[in-house]
Image (cartoon, rainbow, N blue to C red):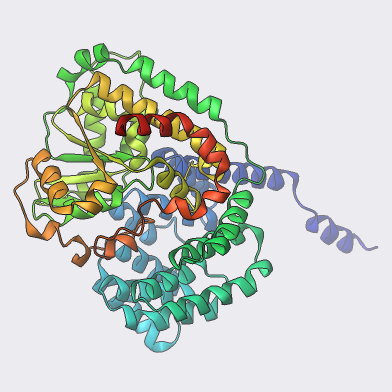
Amino acid sequence: MSKLAKKLKRKKRPNKLMLLKAKQVNSLLVQAKKFADSYQPDQSAKLYRDILHRDPNNNDAYSGLLNVLLSSRKFIEAEKLIHSAENMHTAGIGQTVDLAQIFCAQQKWDDALGILKPALDKGTVNANGLYYFGQALKGRGELEESKPYFVKAIRKQPDYFEAYMSLCSLYYQLEKKDDLISLLHEIESEIDKLQENKKGSFLFLLGLYYDYLDIYDTAFQFIERANKLKMKGRIYDLKGDAAYFNHIKNEVTEEFIRKNIEFGSTDNSSVFIIGMPRSGTSLVEQILSCHPQVKALGELPYIYHYASMFDYSAPVSSTGMLASEYTKSIDELKSDAPFFTDKMPQNFLFAGLIHAAFPRAKIIHCVRNPLDTCFSCYKQNFQGPHYYAYDLRSLGGYYLLYEDLMTHWHGIMPGVILDVHYEDIVQELPVQVKRILGYCNLSWDDNCLNFHQSDRFVETLSSDQVKKPIYNRSLYRWENYKVYLAPLLETLKPVLDKEITQKI
């Protein structure tokens, strides 16, 4: 072998230093994703930026950072990212689509359509561009017109989950049952060909919409498969959560609030909507968003982020610092409306800290039948740290921890939190709307009764439901699956027995 050949052969071998750096980058990507999933956007963004500093062309880091900025509503930073040197790999259609994604996240539908239209006319738009064009049309209420773009996106990318999800949602809203069934059958026929990391999302989708169609046995089969796949390789630590909940109860006492409340913010503009996921938080948010004095800001990660790092041994003035950091984080999101909602259900963990930091804020706690709440959680494909939700027994155990903590908050802060029961809203909407508005010191507005007619785009898992008039088909829906829910029924027995006793 010639010297030149040997030299070329040596060059082809992976450099050990390069391999080490690649492993380090992959480790940072994993950690950044964990931070993002745990509602810690600042730590996540920092890691993604560190990776991009080392490797400006790292697509995973760029996409991760963009998603973190969008989920935490930092739209100005997101636009800067797209135009910055950090983003060296998205020139052309990639940059156009990313900007369209930002416009859609802000519900600037016309801007999204305007920036995508030239590429659409030239035929240079990719699957993502077609998807966001459809989303923008859907956001404007042009449901029928949006359909072809989701279909085209799927043709370009057959495993495009978000496009399938939007199309299912579209058929559901338009009450096109036959089209929905046909689409579900199409997904079923392809499900086993998918990579495992995508299969779970499609299984949840099948389960969710077969449930909407009242095809219960088929729905549960897919829901159960989805949950088992979601938990593959994972172990939920119920004891760890129990210890954490008890830690919060031991730290945030009546005395803690009494000492800290004087250092809290004097601002009275915030309405925090909390509760178990799937308990009606999106419905309450949608009702309040229809009031002209209220701006709905969606699910904000900031309270969870700052509260989960709160040092309870720090000086009492720390609650004021928490309030200040939170206020700075949401400053660019607020509008001229005097009040805003922050609908992060998981903030029930920090209701006491919220009251100490924002004594004049309103806290609305959404409550729903325990079995309906838990089964609705079980059939959802959550994003974030909801590992308790993928096993019926764990789900019941987590619900007991939640209820115990809410009992603690009511005990140390009597009269502070307003409990709103989903079943009461369904059965007596005007009465409950009046009660909610009264608690928030808001005048009556008929628009709050017609929440389903709002043109506001809802991004949560309840987006289909809040676009329909109030209905009772979600009441006691768990009963259709009773034969499958023995582990949940057994675990929830203490709370179910208590409910029965209270009704007698």
